Image (cartoon, rainbow, N blue to C red):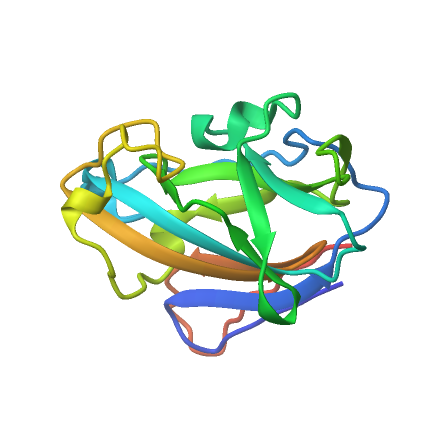
Length: 202
């Protein structure tokens, strides 16, 4: 059980790192979420005029020969089709894996998950746990490193299927294998400063 309370009005939030439980598994979305699409939330109308350059950094000590691919519910991540892996990762220093080619997408919200393949690139299994969620509008923007000419969807140098929009937001995501950070944020004005808010769960 996790609880959080505040004595002042405004945004109430809680963050924690959680090892994903073994009883949850799969390669398609197993968590239902409801999102409101008001202009006050998730970046307002700007999100419809923004493309997202997302760099994934995965910390995982894999066995020799094991390879990692990223799947998700966007065309750039194979639409969960493990028979058509596209977004391969490469191992770097200190067992940090990064995408061979950057992900550039016009979708600000999608689910995704890492999967292991053997040395012959034969599918082994997805990481355990519920599907990861990317809400790019909630992520802080990283420093831009590239000019607009870099984002040519016809070049083949990016995982990119559509022309970029007017704005490009670059994001860096650092994560561990089968581990995720969950952030709860609720905007609810409190009139009485002695009132609080509690999050309950199991």
